[in-house]
Image (cartoon, rainbow, N blue to C red):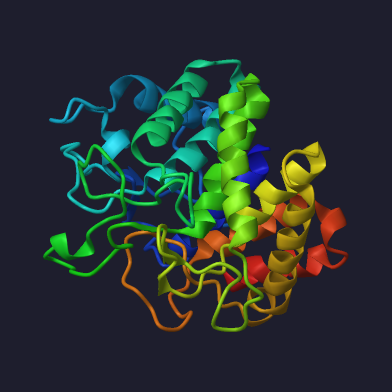
Length: 337
């Protein structure tokens, strides 16, 4: 499990080190040291304990030391990030759905690695908060699904009002808008949490996400993904047309099909449409655009990111049976990033 998750970090460090002055520069306040092959030397010694130490420090911070904000909640409920040094919450659009999905993925993997259940309990509290404070009404076109963003510090998630951020106005989704790719990502997180705990509440939320995705899919083309990037949850008015990050919805639908849960026929149809589109367009033209919640709206898919490409590569490595040319595609994705 852990080497899949190390891909993004390894690629980032490789790119970073290529631009560093070896003798002078620092990385996270540590002097950069390289071995004879110019590979980064860990500042954690002995080096064979570096992975364990880093992940334990990260979870210790999340479980025990994240600051409580003025609204009475730990920062990760209502803020996207903290200032380095001061630890002060940053006034910037929050990303609750993506955060919760990644938290579940990481907590489940860490529990399998360590046996420590405290991160799982933290993930559950974040999921439960999303249920209560960031889910669209069931009668809407996109009903019973999570909002991807919110205003900084807001107790309820309803999409972010980008115009509030004077340093960069008009960023984010807009009030009442969701991101279908995050519906897929957190839907898969709900399903994973159901499989981990057996609690059927999470299964029902996963099914609601899958139902919304399968009933609102379209064929797509080079400028239109199978689901828009930003869409008004109640009316279906599209705020932005393109997101290459279809692997999250694909993972949710594939797992429900495997488990034979819900409307499997509709899920199978939607998964095939999304898979065929991904292979025809972003896998060929590398328009890996449309992921982050706090960016301007784009008319064309030219706001590239590494996340969607590498999550797709990770899925292909975990499921090589899905793609006969997975080795070629993974190599191309990593090279592109």
